[in-house]
View 1 (cartoon, rainbow, N blue to C red):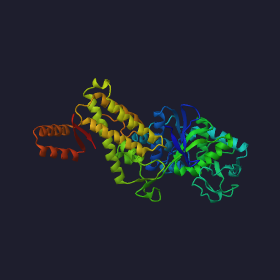
View 2 (view 1 turned 180 degrees about the horizontal axis):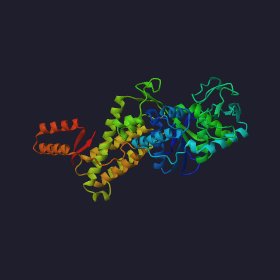
View 3 (view 1 turned 30 degrees about the vertical axis):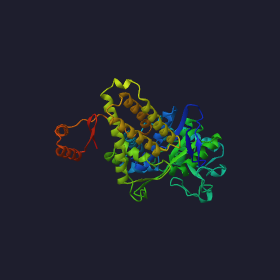
View 4 (view 1 turned 180 degrees about the vertical axis):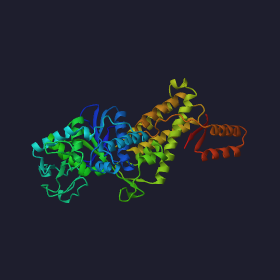
Length: 468
């Protein structure tokens, strides 16, 4: 098997070959930290965390860089609203970002450079562009001369005459051409600013990622990722800036995830239908949110509804409970786990794990990879129902599960739950009722516990419980 990645630049799947054997350089555009992460932001966070997990699973050392845009028009406006500084706004929402990452079971990046800590790199980058004739100054603003970069538009494949410019690309009479974009913005009175050869100001949006990616990953990245909305103008402008200086491709593979809709409507501020991750996490566990995100291929649109989340919750719980039951069964005979798994178990697990990898290597096909995990669930449940099953078979089951779940992280590690006194009393009473074959009372207690948020499962190894 060989990993295939759909490359946005070529609009085709290509075999992944990193520049350096065994190592991957990966850059994913990070948040502009003026507010809390919403569900649309969470999709690339989870998608590219999973990509990174899989690359590490198959033996690569991944240098994963994602930035913080901590100065921007939106941060300036937010600081005014909150009657505080831009730096304080950034700190508040960067801390909130870390909390959401932990709540989504996402591993931190290798590095999170900040724009405000990279100002010298950015200014030097703009100076180099100016020296080569790719940048020009007018009234304290510095613009990129798109007419000099002959391949501008190659990533998004848009005709320059038909381009619709993003909100951060200003069109005014100071530009040589309407499609030219800002590299350095002159500061308005009272605004946060830095000194530069063109006067006090701050960088434009696109130049920030080019400068930080070059500094921490070099001229050419192996994988550059982000949401579909970043293809133009952001990633298009990154290509123009970096490649004008290096003469090399900015990235060998471009990956873009699809949009999230809310109830079949595009998520937007104008519709007021944005959902914050911190609020969603109050209702759903990390495994449920990750299951929802990964149950659709990353390049396809994803529709968020109450029903879809409840369905994801049920499916994620089924996987988690099977894993928990296998662990419980293994705890009953830890010594037996040291033996050799049966030939049949070894063969069936090899087929399941092999299928998992085949799907992941087909452009990170997580929906079908999840199907492989449900094949594991079926095998686990059938083995649990066999009172003569070898403990070594359960150890083999857990090892296979860990390999797959280490990528998707649908059942993140959680602290062992402890039942309260009332729950323990009801569980003990139900056990006694079942012993006396009082099935009516047993069912009544199950319903009582269910109303309390406690789910029960009767297994050959005894009754197991967990919270909803």
